[in-house]
Length: 346
Image (cartoon, rainbow, N blue to C red; front, top):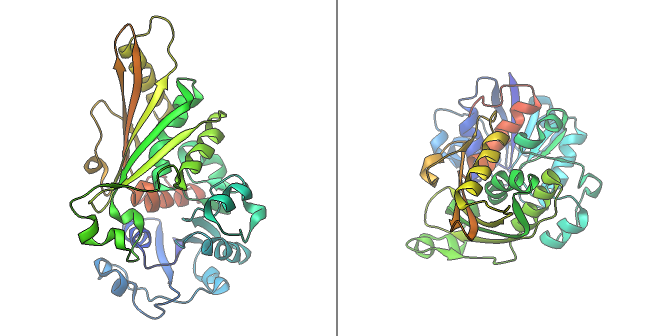
């Protein structure tokens, strides 16, 4: 049985990891840490785990954790996470890191967007991105896996194959995303209080959200093409889920109609994900309820315009931000790292 440590156990992603592990036939949660709630039962912090998880929270002591677990799920915020990941690796553990500390390809890019000095700079650009649909071979042997961001997952999945195939204009990509409030974390914030978030939808971090460069960086790594992405996130009054509506200009050959373009893009997506159990290219319009509480992704394409003048392609992609956008992806990565069925527990 694979033994799992949960590092930073009080947030929503940690709860989701613990919930998924209760149904995993090849892994079990053996350690859970918290800097502020040592000694408390994990089920006291997350009452929905009552009767399913009786672990008490402990302090972060890497050598002790390594004696009790084979892999760590590190659910700490950026900046704080990298040093803890290094300490765990030095203690002989393999780690799935939920923060952004190892996702980007350069220290300069990370420090520009996150505004902190990286504590383990030599590993930036040398950690595999945790998207098994593209990087399974590297994940299988990795000591550290950078778990993807939630918004980037909803954009990279549909965009990377189309960019790689040369089907879209790389310099004109608009990603418009709506996320549930859990994406902002569990710590109290003015904008996520009930009276602030209920009955409204609001854009934020326009042209300045840190997930924009992650989308560009990873699409480039997968496709080999440099892209320009204009990303706008929105907060919506729901618990969980992300719906991304993506606008691109197709590269149109002479005589291609909107129907032809749409079919070609859908075919490319279906070809790319034909053997992937969690990615579904669908004819209907995806919505967040279609994928809620699952590790599944639904995507589709529509093309506007006329036969004489095809217009933009509109790609719609839905994920659960806490599952495929975070903890489900981490379980999937863990399964690949240890040679288990990638779908186990999911």
